[in-house]
Image (cartoon, rainbow, N blue to C red; front, top):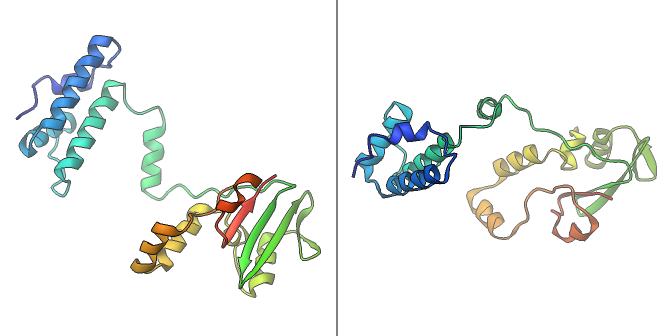
Length: 202
């Protein structure tokens, strides 16, 4: 089965009416029914080039159906495509969450849970007020650490490091039974926090 000649034109026409939306639904249904040859022809009609050889037939269908709907809706929101390009190139840095005064940070290290209270003057831990989380992390571990990283404020970096440390067997077990990286949460959600590093907010 091959795509209709008007497929490319339909992809450039915003589906602003009920009739246009119904027609778009028909085109998507046709895409989902195409064989490999038809999918390749549809890809060329939409993109002007052959599809990647490594892309499976089910994935081709999903990508084409999504792309057809996206184009009919007018394309990506302004600025989103440029941001996605920067992310793919590694140009966007992971954002570090800013802790708020009155909150607490919890971190378990060698079987001991350390609680850091966030104050307007800094961070209170072990009966003293500290200016830097990194200094506290060094006092706890005896090694140089990034404070935000040690306390799980940079979730993206922690997730990447955790994945690098895991063997395939451990990764499989983690996927089945271990909670993911900690995120800011309220008291009612404390039981779901990762015991390795967790943030508790007021």
